[in-house]
Every structure is written in C-alpha cells, then in structure tokens.
Image 1 (cartoon, rainbow, N blue to C red):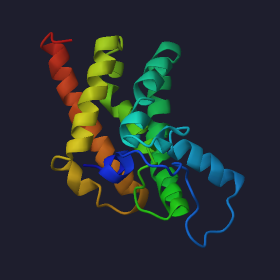
Image 2 (cartoon, rainbow, N blue to C red; image 1 turned 30 degrees about the vertical axis):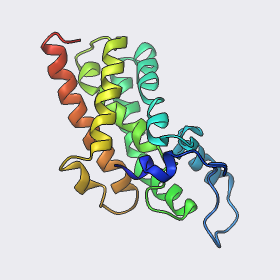
Image 3 (cartoon, rainbow, N blue to C red; image 1 turned 135 degrees about the horizontal axis):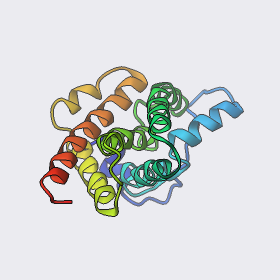
Length: 186
C-alpha cells in the first residue's frame, strides 16, 4: 500500500490534515506555498480519507480538459512539462513537510495521468467517460498494489522516487487501457 494510502492517513482523525512545517523549519516563502499547493493537488492531498485516491481525481479531468483545447503538440509539451517539474516539486514539498513521500503530496498521482492517457492522446482518440473512468481505476489498482517494478522505483531518492513509482503504475495502466480499448471492452 503506498504511503499516501496508509491506514493511519486514511482513517478519520480529529486533527486537521494541514501541511505543517517540519520541526525547526524556516518560515515559508511565497514560492514554498505555491509548491505546497501544487504538491497537495490544490489541497486534495489533505483529505483525511485516502489522500492519494482523492488527489488522483484531479488527473483525468485535467488531461481531458487540456485535450479539448490544445493541439497534439500542445498536449505533448504540457504533459512533458507537467512530469518534468514533478521531481523538484515533490522533493521541495517533502523537505518542507519533513517526510519522504508524505501522504499529502499527490502531485505524482496527478502527473501520472499524462502517462495513463498518452496512447489515446497520441492516437487522437477521444477521452470518453468509460476511458477516463477505466484509466482512473486501473491507475489506482497499479499504484496501490505496487507490483514489481513499481515497488522498486519508490526507493529512488527524493522527488525522483516519489514520481517514478506513480509514472510506472501509469504506464502499466496505459498498456492495459490500450488492450481493453483494442479488445472492444471500452
């Protein structure tokens, strides 16, 4: 089970789920607050119940919305940039929060949907509701189960490890989604 789905974080508690500063940390700059907003999926990662799943809910609508307004080259640029800035965002957020891969950091889950839906975008297929829902479910299954090699990638340092396991889970979900689509299941 990924760190952002641990039972202690998915259980309801009386404490607010806020991104508190690490002990002894310096005051946060405006850039730090922007990083935390992005890293927590605009606050969705602060959910007391399954923050990784709640944060993942941003991914499909984000990719779908971009697919409606951007040409293929624009989708490629936005997807690559979204993934490329992930490691530094996740590294900084984890340092600000004083923990490697804190449950509230869900940028990695959101970014993974650029991989999940990349084949459909590349083939210029429409991202229909069944494809969006299936992609979401498949990604969550592979992200939570942490099958090999996904489980090995999360051990990479800092934001690279935070991002890599989710991107790998997204790639596996993408393959299954393509096969399901070609088989006529979607």
